[in-house]
Length: 125
Image 1 (cartoon, rainbow, N blue to C red):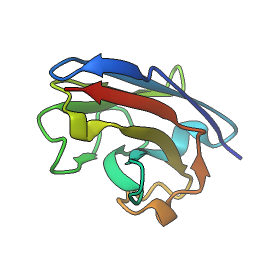
Image 2: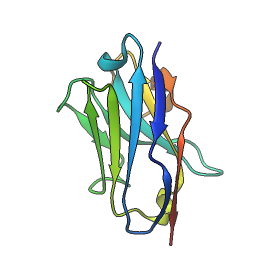
Image 3: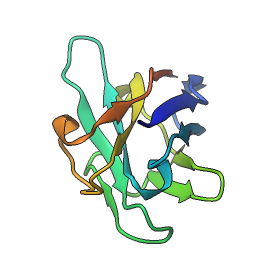
């Protein structure tokens, strides 16, 4: 079992920045690949970023956030981060942290076993 708790969401103006955090706990937390997804009202959940379990290893980003968002992880703290810069109104969504205990670093929601409760990000124009 892995438990995930997100924090750091809020309201920000377009062009601003936010950093989301996801604290993981559980026996396999630090060997799981981790992902960030988001879901805007009326839309399906979509992939944002993912990172493999070893620090400094593989990262993937959705095209819509490349160059603006950076995902990192600190295994000593069992925490992953999503630094979001140059935010746009279309980034408005509930952001979810997810863990894949099979460490596949996928882009599909159903590849992830565990999910946090989500943190809301609102970007005003």
